[in-house]
Length: 137
Image 1 (cartoon, rainbow, N blue to C red):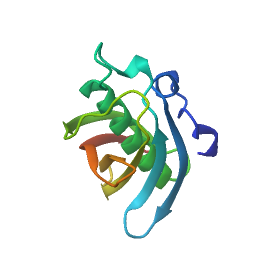
Image 2 (image 1 turned 90 degrees about the horizontal axis):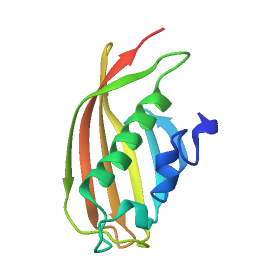
Image 3 (image 1 turned 60 degrees about the vertical axis):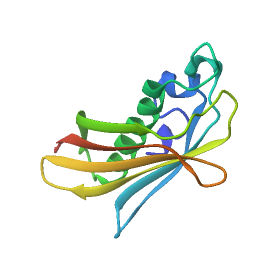
């Protein structure tokens, strides 16, 4: 999993200014990932505000990474089956943000994740929950 730190193997993560920084597993939430995000102009509309769909990209990637961190061997996520994302506060190009994704529940065929983007004051900027199809080796 360490090779996926940084852009997570997806160029779009780096282009929009985000980076995965650390991950792990724990009894409480299975797997988790944390990272930083300083939205680049590519992530923003013409007024400099981060577009809601770009928030969804970060949130989806964070949940996927967290679930993969909790899986062993060659098991992995196959697809995002469902995701609900909410943008609660506006974010702007150059803002210093943090994100965290974690596993809510792991079943045999699916996993449930949750992710949040927060500003440095701890306020939630956006959040999401999702259901992910698992591939078990």
